[in-house]
Length: 365
Image (tube, rainbow, N blue to C red; front, side):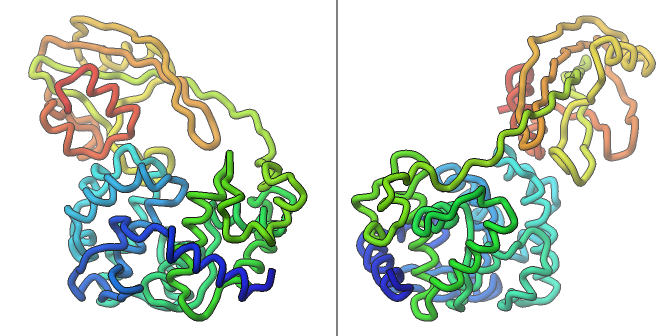
């Protein structure tokens, strides 16, 4: 199948079946968030909305992203409002979406764009910004600015590896380079915004990881994996690796005023910039720390160990609930270790496991 046939078949399918009512595809916004660009007859997209949605969609499914996007755009309708917001407020709205470096980069990039007073519209400019890689930049340029640039997100990788029967894990540098070359060759000059949305939609709705709907696919006649009858073999899986296990104790310490002690994590790394519970190597170490701070322990309870899995290790954590009968007024490190009342917790950026733990043992909602 030639590139032109590939494009025509895909766009004809998109016109009839493509998704055109996603929140980031709809609605007018003011010119200050990058201007508005009309795509098709009804869909109106802005660089800000495209960038925000593409950032949220990195390693996250559309159904999960939609409520977060809606809440985010209501709170921060334009780049200026996002740039001027405290990072804690941004992280709070991101809580539960994971990969929190995306939120920190989003905030930093909004500040950089606001300083420039214009949304960058070239590949080089976009790639200079935190959190914007080649595929996200391509999506912004093609969808928001109607400039022909290829993309290569997870859905597109799956479509192209099957269509061309590309062996090897797409994360491998040689395979990734080959896929970028294919994506560039297939990306059209005309209707590039619709094409970009179409190929993402195809991967998300038909060319899925399991049980792909090959008979309904507009590219099935040229798909090499389908011809060979081994669609399930593509893309190749990531080489298996045994994840290491880290163990720690999380101290959920509350005082007589029903305040909870929280620590702000470093700006980078796991749960970067979020509020969390003090961490210790074990239960005894947590208790010794309380005593060293003259915190009398009125009651304590160790809960069952729980597991949270990150991309590169398992975290087995044991929550230790400690109750003190006295109000405690120390701050171990200014603005890093702080007592919060239960009603204040729902305004903080909290990692999902920490938020669930606090919801179970405080009045946070």
